[in-house]
Amino acid sequence: MKEFEGMTNESLALLYVEGNNKAFDELLSRTQSNLFQYIMFVVRNEDVANDIFQETFVKVITRLQEGKYTDSGKFSFWLTRIAHNVVMDWYRNQKSEHILDLADDNDLSNLQGDEILDNFRESEIVNEQVMTDVRRMMETLPAPQREVVFMRFYQQLSFKEIAELTGVSINTALGRMRYALINLRKMAREYHIELVLE
Image (cartoon, rainbow, N blue to C red):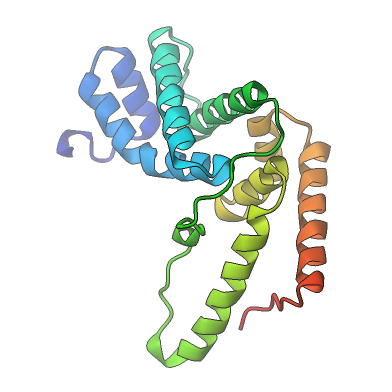
């Protein structure tokens, strides 16, 4: 919406608190894609992801209306933290550390675009295969490890931010990343997968 051009997400959230429902619509349209992608990556089931996404926004609306948001310049961080908590609640309800099986048509290929020039097609094919192999191996990691890898490499968050978002210490976040990398290397050796980009 043109009336909100140039406004930050934080400003939109505060406008919504003041009663401007259109500000929330704009906020939702700006954040829903990244948030759903994060949730989907963690739970790997579209129906569950949709439920968690809806519950996350119900909690966001409730907290905004209760005045539990202050402009800290990190609305997306706050939003992801709420989503993370909803996901963890869902895990606790499932009484399992493992998430549902990945649908056959979802290989997480939406996480990287193909924008390499045509004259590098051979390198592009090799790189695509490497990234496909990495995504497939990541899908087999336990959820806490997969979540840390996603936040670090796809969202480019610091370990301090990851620790805050997931409610663990920095050492635990680092440990999860370490074990994820060990597991990925082990799988690469076991299946003779070359993980070098050209």
